[in-house]
Image (tube, rainbow, N blue to C red; front, top):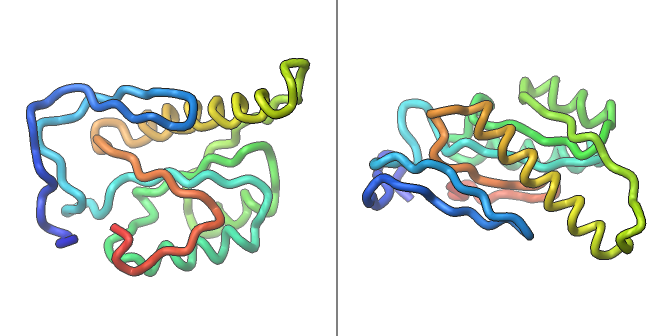
Length: 151
C-alpha cells in the first residue's frame, strides 16, 4: 500500500488478463511500480448513460491518494451528451463505443457478447492511449465508490 514501494517483479514477459469472455495479452516490463513520479496505475472507467452517478463516482475516485486525471480514460458505451459533458468538464479523455443493435443470436447470449466486445475494444484503446507508460490497467465502472486507500 506504500505509494513508493515497487510491486514484486519477475522476468519480463507476457501478462494475461481475462475480462469477461475475452483474454488479452499485454507485454509486461521487467519492473513495475504501483505509483511513482507519474502517479497511479493507468485506469479505464466504463460508463454509459448515468451522468449523476458518474459525477459521484469521479468525486469519490479523486479522493484516492495518487489518482491523476492524466492516468484515467473513460469508455462510453453509446452516445450520451450529458455523460460526455461530465467527462469533458473534468478533463478526462474518453472514447465512444458505438452500440450495436441486438440481433438474432438470442438476447441473453448476445448481451454478454456485446459487453465483452466493448471491454476488449476499450482495453485496446486504453493501452493504445497510454502506450509504454501502462504495463497495467485498473478497470473501474461509473457506479463505484472508492476507499481512500483503493490503490
